[in-house]
Amino acid sequence: MLLRAVTEDDRDDILLWRNDPVTRAMSRIHDPVATINHQTWFARMLIDPGQLMVMAIEDDRKIGVVRFSQDKNCWEVGINLNPVERGHGMGHTVLAQAIDYFWKFYPKSPLRAIIRPDNKASHKIFTSCGFEWIDRSLDHDHLEAYNPGERRD
Ligand SMILES: CC(C)(COP(=O)(O)OP(=O)(O)OC[C@H]1O[C@@H](n2cnc3c(N)ncnc32)[C@H](O)[C@@H]1OP(=O)(O)O)[C@@H](O)C(=O)NCCC(=O)NCCS
Image (cartoon, rainbow, N blue to C red; front, side):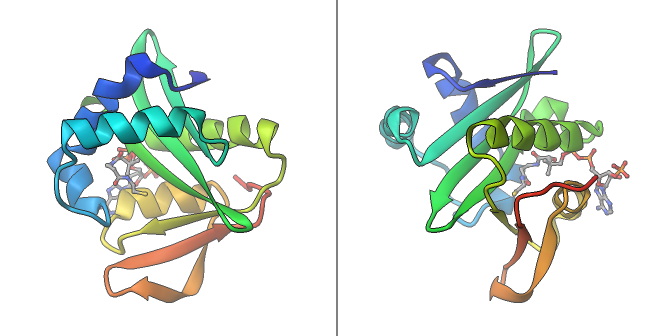
């Protein structure tokens, strides 16, 4: 699998995947993102030093993205696979390799993830990448997991 930072060419795929019904159901904000809002956000994200978005590619197929957003002393991480690539066990590899890619730029930076309790596939892949559940809910709909900066498989 090849990992690279996203480029302008990925913008429309990322919007399509973000507005997929499953992704919306699993997101903190369920509404679809309007194209113009996405384009503005994406242009800013590309030049923001507090954001890194990584695209995973296999056999010329875009498998999914992992986004790292700086938040005080920690980076929040989220994953979204291309809908046609879900359910085939790719999520773990994408997340693990994206974290390794991120740590090359920000060695051993701690990571947090915010995940809905019913998102079993996401729980499994984050746990398998060394995240541990924090013993408190962020709100009624989400749980928080933490990786101190050293992934364990
Ligand atoms: C969540 C996501 C990244 C998971 O990646 P994936 O490749 O589709 O995951 P898989 O379907 O292979 O499932 C991963 C693991 O969870 C298990 N799993 C999946 N659904 C499950 C369920 N309902 N109950 C228990 N285990 C489940 C799978 O068996 C697999 O386990 P294994 O590694 O031991 O085989 C991907 O589906 C996705 O992008 N979803 C939409 C966006 C999203 O929810 N992002 C996460 C928000 S942080």
